[in-house]
Image 1 (cartoon, one colour):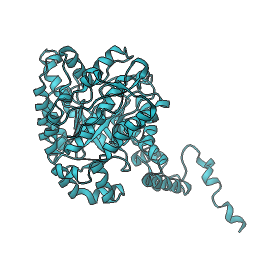
Image 2 (cartoon, rainbow, N blue to C red; image 1 turned 180 degrees about the horizontal axis):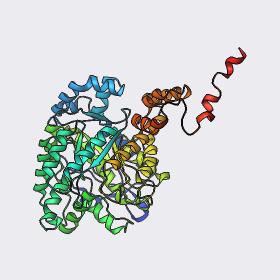
Image 3 (cartoon, one colour; image 1 turned 120 degrees about the vertical axis):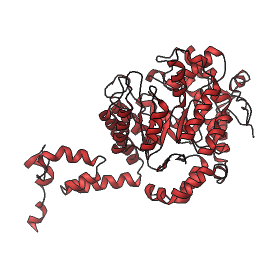
Length: 493
């Protein structure tokens, strides 16, 4: 295949920008680390901009039909569902097809996931919301996870991830797939790690073949998208350790792979044998959710060299995967101060060829445990306006415990509000139409109309139930400002 550039590498000392050599192609190891030794500094900002244009050109160079010709499962899925997707998203069918081919939009759907309604991710399609559920060693109740799945779907989640790390993970996963009509994702590294740790062994003893076997098994079970930390290189792991980050590595999957690499002095197998991963996922149209193993776990860590080193790798991997016919989205930052959110999002989108961006939060403060769904929604709204395509919810349980059904509902609604706020700022027709309908209903004191226009109609009805026979709300009663002026203009006609 054509050799391509690692566009930019930001190194810790002095934040110097570097140009590096190409990485290898099909059936060869991805030589990320040797490239560093031959890195040469850019001579000028003009060269930097030129490199960025190279990345953009590569992202746009894929022919419109190439992805579909290589991914027959995706082609069949789109042929079957395109008319319904176009109606749902109020987008032209040809626009959807072109964006999927270009890699700026993806269609989540594994043919093996029965009764699935596949979903589009990528603006200008509606910004989607994901809900994370799953067992833990301290809270292992599969029946509760099924109830949380139902709560997430009822609240309007567009996708769900099973992050279980305790119990019979295969049984849990298969049960959730059967009960979930929306795309379902996983982190295969968790299942591999569970077997190793539950047996009393060290994660450094993992065999790469076991990881790839787990990915293949889950693809066969019907999983629609998988978080795989392919961009976390041995160099990046070492950078995160040496930089003395405030929170170090906070990704569970990322920390396990980092430990494996540093203990064994080997490269990440998901990076080294990326073609093997692609070969597994292609027949099932499994979307690679390229994980952010070095995402900042504290606002003070946002934007360091380790984070950007991984982002650059993810951009190159995504471009290569698309050429092989596999869809990708990029996972984005976690804890980012509000004034840095826009720059982070735009930088990630630029360096990853405008691939769909899947973001946790971003959490714009670190000191709101119990209210992280609010902190995440604030960052999420700004992120959507800056280009985020897919929001992963946070719940009131974040950093504290496993979420319950109420937490799941609160998290989904907070992220849905964030998505809607961002879409209003982007003048998305659907968001503006909802706002107009709500305003018209409020002006007319039309409570049914208000409930219909609300993001959460059930909440409107339940909070109003005690005074539902009144034409005004219980806060104002006869002092209602809207009612106060009704009919005044007609008295003088």
